[in-house]
Amino acid sequence: MIAYAPAALFFLLFGIGVVRDRRQFSNAVLLGIAVSLLSLALLAELRKAPSMVITLAAAVIVLLPALGTAALVWFLLANGLTMIRKEGRRPANLLSLLAGLGILGVIGLLVAALIVHSRPLAALAGTAVLVVGYISFLFTCFVGYAFLYSRHRPRRDVDFVIVLGSGLIGGERVPPLLASRLNRGREVYEKQAARGNPPVLITSGGQGPDEKLPESHAMADYLVERGFPEEHIEREDRSRTTEENLLFSKAIMEQAKPDYRCVVVTNNFHAFRAALLARQTGVNGHVFGSPTARYYWPSATIREFAAIFLSHKLVNFGICGFIALCGVLAAL
Image (cartoon, rainbow, N blue to C red; front, top):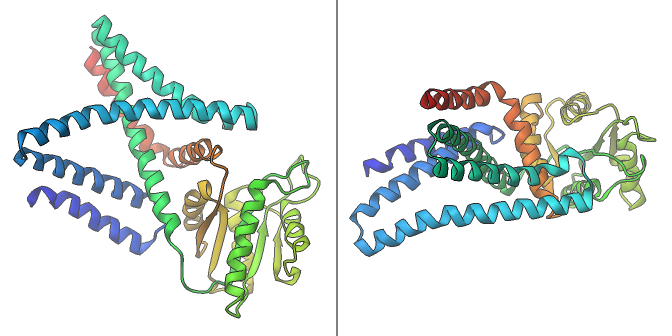
């Protein structure tokens, strides 16, 4: 049982973190470490298994990563081409394609190192694998915990529902992505209104340089045109970023009710990062995600992870730099 002690410790730390505040990326990392340690402990138990079981387990351990990597590369490349076809060649739409090509590049580097038998090339390939492994571990933690976070539904009533804005079509019309947020915000509103305590819905979004009106006004118009009671809408029309969405909406809520509770609505791929920003800005509320087109989700999720990775760049670049330094020393 001692082999399971490290995993149990990290599961305990994860539980404490969740109880303190679900909106922490450290929770995702603690859960990832706990699951990894549990997996290692279970593998250690295989020593007691019959030889046939050990052989099958070894085959799975070897084949599963190889097949999984091949499937992942194919999926990323296919999704990248779909994104280009449907959304255009903007840099944000190329992320899944670039991720797939990057994995292929690392594999190619490993193959070249094995063929050439060059120590510097082998050190470079090993360093690349370790860096990619570290980033992949964090990405897996992010995706796994974001999924768990999305399953949580607060049971208490809230005073406000904040719907975060996004760009407008033609500078004035609500696109499908934003309509999904508004529909989910309306759903949250109506469920509580049915219990006799309707919250105020805040549409949050300022006016971009290529927009004819503030996003919050277009969002409010969208809701009113579909029968939403206008007297229960508050427009926050100054923000340009998610952080400003939350800060300016927080000011509105605190002015109306200092001890407010709220729900923030955005798309599902953006929900966890919005939750991290809500904690950072001091907004007292949970974040709900609305549905997103399946083809759009992978690139958008990679973009959200990249933003979180860069928000902790001192730690992450420090670890990647240390790995790179070790690779240089190994090549000498």
